[in-house]
Length: 115
Image 1 (cartoon, rainbow, N blue to C red):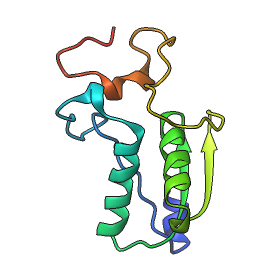
Image 2 (image 1 turned 180 degrees about the vertical axis):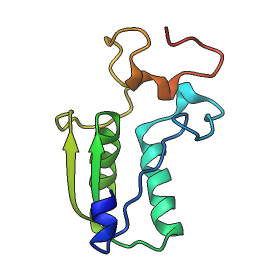
Image 3 (image 1 turned 135 degrees about the vertical axis):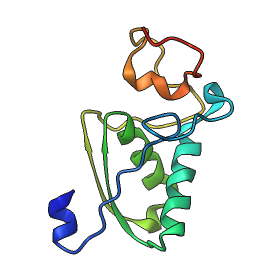
């Protein structure tokens, strides 16, 4: 990110809802990838950024894929790491992942354990 910023570009690495220092959503189990893509749109609009090159890793890859499909006019390019393209839809994230798998934590409420 430092190299990108040194080259004169903005480098932004937001925490998604419920990750890092972000606030937990009121109903995390009902949060969708559309909600996360909408959050990204609000961030870009707030920062007055019209076009972006998105990079998503693991969990973030699904968000940038969804954002690019819904807002193609805002995306110059995208790159992802660790996850192949998967269409998003009304389904929840895959449920066959091990209990406590980090990519499921975004839908866990603060009172539940992620053993």
